[in-house]
Length: 219
Image (cartoon, rainbow, N blue to C red; front, side, top):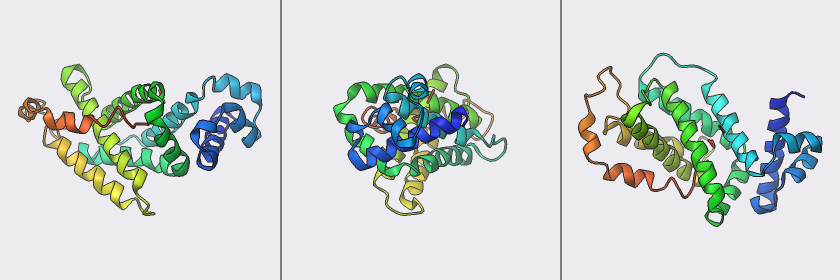
């Protein structure tokens, strides 16, 4: 078993336990035993319980970034990248719902996952061909964090097998972000910067970031 297989097995066992017993009762040791994994290796690779969620975020990023898209509109690339991350999350839906319920009671974990999510969205921004450097890049990355967080909240409640409501929410959030010119489709970086003057809508979308986020962002 290579490292990726080991990590995937432990993450899967942990989130299965979270679904059955609640995230609060999950430990790395319990997940390793559930998956039949060596405890010393589990301790080495997952020194903290939060490492389970951080690793899931990295696994989701790896899947999203596996097919390096070099064609198509920026909006289409962002949609595909974020949906690929959600496809990974969908495999652990019940366990992640338990995690989300626990976040209001665990501000330290929320902050930790928030930082990981920002880094994940920086990668998604870059992979989509959007310049994420400088002040404008900082705003763009945080807008994508808001898009992701909003979509994740809808996904949490979306019981449809095809994630129809989730895809619609992502479409709408990207449309809103596009109106601010944060993800330009052309080469003119200054074409739509007028939208940056009105950041109230950006703040409205970004306000949800601190209360629930996960890819888990894994960086």
